[in-house]
Length: 227
Image (cartoon, rainbow, N blue to C red):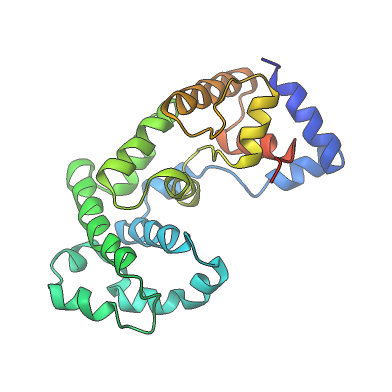
């Protein structure tokens, strides 16, 4: 497998030089303090936003988000955990939000999930902050199993969104890994693929001292995947 320095050089060439690449990266950094102190309602809100993004135009969700906040009681897990069935039924006809029944009910399930994490670890933010970076795939597996609709790319974008140091295996990142000699499957999403991706990012982080966020973005900047 080629060194990450070769990938960085390719990204610099494609983006107009080292300074230009650095400018693209400067606003994308992990924020462990913000994550650790993030209130549980903001964790649940970000989970819900990522879920509603899936299959919809993000700008539409963003434009309606104040309505989501109002309709879902500010995403307060404690309040949502005791909300009666009628509350959730009424949301399916609430024009302030996207009226997708399955996604609405995922908020209910994830409110319970966030409360469980808070009870077990003090807060959901502390849980996410303390999970070892070297085992991101284990965290994604937990999100898939204990959360609702938090598997796949939704879980990866959630981790990035709440400030955790994490990679996102986009098509461009997968193309970069393949070009570096990583033997991924055609989908890049099998359990073996995930293990390979984790190992490569662990190795690159040790080699370079860079965050997973920067490693992931530089990888994506270095190549364009066929679409």
